[in-house]
Figure 1: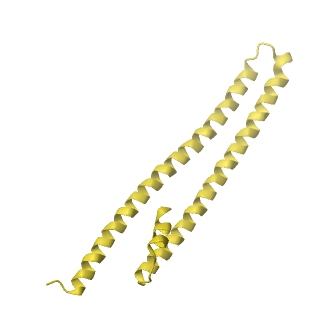
Figure 2: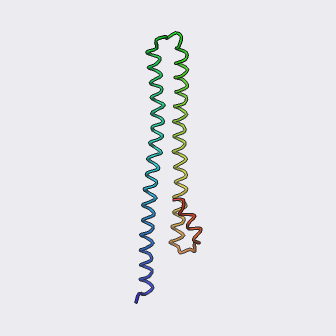
Figure 3: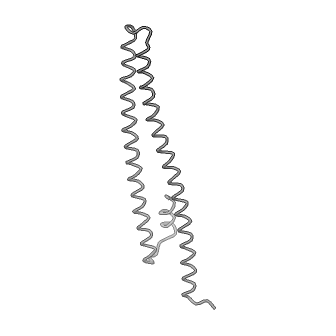
Length: 133
């Protein structure tokens, strides 16, 4: 017959396996989202930088330099401003994502501590804490 200590060990092992499974899924999901986000930010910066280079080539190889110089210079200035705004936006997006993840980590650590201390957690509260992973 199985005594209560063995039941606790079996339940603890099952919970540990489930927690590890959830952790692996969350880590994989985080890595996918992070890679996509960083890739899109870098592509945005690259496109902006390339448009500046193309504008400079347009200025350099302009057939009608006197008539169109103001137009190409204004396009280049606008492109530089847009590139600067895109880079600032990417920086703030990364900072904001980092803050959100830090808050989630704190919340998850609180949940782990509650579980370790054997506090009673309602199923709804636990699900609410876990669904954000």
